[in-house]
Image (cartoon, rainbow over all chains, first blue to last red; front, top):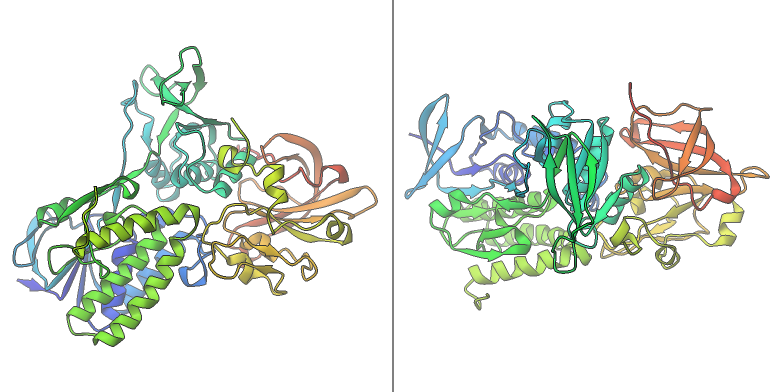
Length: 367
Length: 169
């Protein structure tokens, strides 16, 4: 059987950053991804990132991905693409499919960096062609260069909804409405500001009531919500559109963590059920680490920092770093990570992540 | 709908008055200056790094709102292209006896050319006044963000923040 020191499942920002840390420490890494290209969602992030210099602020997301790939290549990380992992057996044997064949790889440590998937929203007409996740639309325009439609309604005003709205206009579409059930905008005001300047009408305290069309989306009916989130009859508005993009949050892709028996806890602010992990990103199953959205939905910069943490911790437990060196390196990452989790948008995530860590480290129970 | 950035995506007059990134009226009279419309504490500081004149201070933590030192600001405009939130503008009030210029980032196709007449919009995307493009800057360093400099009648200086997006054929 093939073997490696660390198997990393998912070659997005967290998995790539983890791979680079371990390979830099001299470890042997095998990185799996079910897609044909590595990079996860980074290659469709054409906007400039926030943060500071050490987070690569001001750099467009896909350029960060290019650099990560270049580093993994230079460090000789083995990358297995088109290779979905379907299970990890008791003795750290990774079961995966490659070239239509079941294969196996023996590892010493495993990092799960499987990311998240988009939440769905149920409404009449939701199965019509033209209704899609905002992430799917973003892949179409920025990776495959296909415009999903000309007149788009975006549902949800988190950063994904706001950024994808902007990028759909950059790609040549019109965003005819931004619909948000809450009374305020979910994401950063500056992202909202860009699309307001472009004239996108904003409907807060509104939801989609119905989507109508013969064979595809032709029109949406939106309706106002009262303070109890109930539809107010008589406030319906009909908006002509050919595409409805849904961006109502993400949930962690945790199947493998479930299979191997990690303890979970439910934290809505982090996307739902998440595996508990300690400050080393290690789960309650020894030798299994998590990083990125699987351990709580955040954004790519935090995912990369968590990947680095998991990578350094793996390298330490394999004896590639002594305790002092590892602890210095981890402290640097924690400082950067804490910076990203500050302010009115970050503090909530920081508080919830702290709870998650406390649970795994045997602290008091919550909930 | 209420007002303010959280409700509308547009900073209110009140919000703009209370942030440290906006220059004084006296400074606007003196010449070109940065106008930083950053009203939410998000972890971000490329504007501070972009300024060669130490005229923008974010400090630590990087969630601090950027503070403009209006005496040091030369109105070079480097921060305008560096802001990932596209929230910084360069204003030159007394460009001519009757006109001002507003410089802002623009990332749509098609991009207007120098000397084009353009339809200027406010923060809500509503048409305000016709303006004229006097400069289009897109050095490699800006990584595809274009800076448009638009001349407008002076009374619209504090309103105009972009132009109407044209559609590709």
